[in-house]
Length: 161
Image (tube, rainbow, N blue to C red; front, top):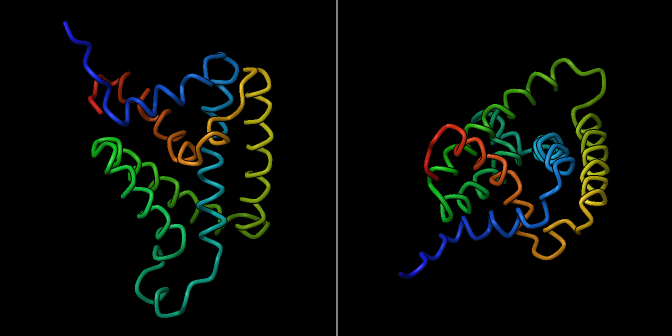
């Protein structure tokens, strides 16, 4: 009997998971990966866009451009996970608008602080794990981290991905 070959997305998730076995590191990733994604989107959101684009939609900014490119990559791996990532992005974009309106500091400053603290957490988690972060081997794992978390949610809900 032949063992089925895992899909490309499953292979990437499995490879990412190899350096994320320690329970403490897993918890750190559940906190820090979304914070890093949120902060990167916030930093990109903060880069001024031409007035012409802003007039089209307040949602049209550099964060949107990067997410469209990321979703294109995710679509190549798994349409179902790509849909989930779009929903995650929409939730983060809505939260960014709230933070931007309510924060005492500029959005970019809040996001820079979150970014630095979340990366400190990530590297501490990998120190506990005793393994280097996956993206040091292959930069595409920066995009796989959020999918790795999302695939656990899909599995918990009994959804295929």
